[in-house]
Image (cartoon, rainbow, N blue to C red; front, side, top):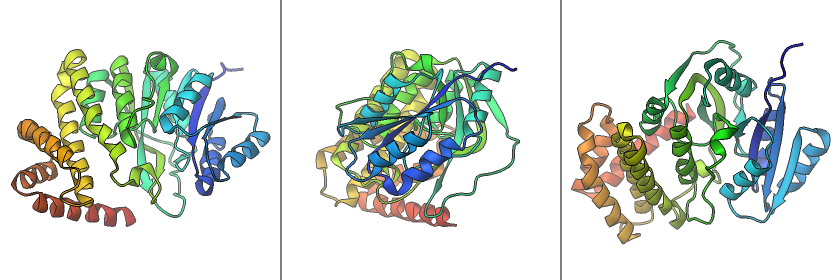
Length: 335
């Protein structure tokens, strides 16, 4: 008999996703990886999500369910971390899916490459469930923490979402998702993924789609700008300061992500009107003016250069340039 595979804990925060939860859970149950535990953390759902969790747990001994008062995905994920027994952690949103071989591929890369983190590619979908690729071959590359951070900040192959990655448990001993803050959406992920990668020494990047994230009106990936999203500016400042002090080799790339995120936030604010949140608008303008020097770097994207230049000329011009780019991206997603 071969050596038993390490236990992998799949942590799924659940809140009012009854229409999508079944497909999410079954995508984990159908994993080819043989040693899993599935932690469903019901974050005070007001629909049938909690009952669905219990229904699946009654049929599958790998599933454990925890119910708590609503406190947001950070609290739910942290509860899952505290209850997890695995040597590895994997985070999955309750309206998203894993391909059948996702954990098998990521775990094998960590073990083979002696990497603390393995990262797969994510792909958006709408409506019908995606058809998972059946090709068993894939390309992968193992890089240093500096190179992994550089690629994350520049969105070269992967982003700073917590999902789509497999982590060794030891990385989470001193890092947790921020609770009781005004963060929402990917700011919560941004706040933890950069120190997690900075703690590592080797990161394996898999060039295969392993995570499928759903785009719909209620998803985090499709949320309109609200006051809670403004925490992204604070997180961006924390990240850039952390990199200056701990990984100065990538401080410019960290500042560039801060700049790009500020542009996205400005567009969301202007969606609510050009007089919306004037103090935050001015804060963003100060940031853009101070970081525009980064546009001269060879990795700066032409689209971002155009957005910065138009914003400095006119907010109205910036808005319509950004709007046209978003519409094009939406059309590309539907194709």
